[in-house]
Length: 108
Image 1 (cartoon, rainbow, N blue to C red):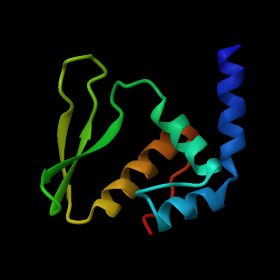
Image 2: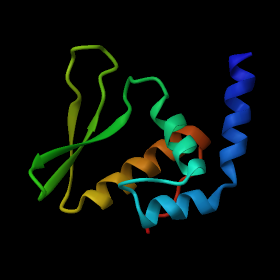
Image 3: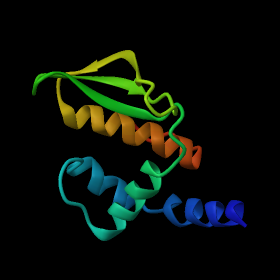
Image 4: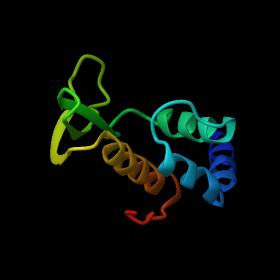
């Protein structure tokens, strides 16, 4: 049953290009109800090996990381760094979208 529900959610978000564009325009802050549902779904996936962003230098540098999936065990920093938080958030969104749909979104 859970597999069918997961496929239904996957299908309902697959063609939502307006939500992708909305996130791209404004990845930080308040979002429309549709985009918020999509983000909740992405963030609700299992914790192991999920991409996330760490701020390494306040307001100047962010680094990509992957979660361990184990409570109390820190995330593992990955070499990719960003000088703009919006670029880091867009990168993570693209990785989570690919994991959810199998589709690679363009960089820009």
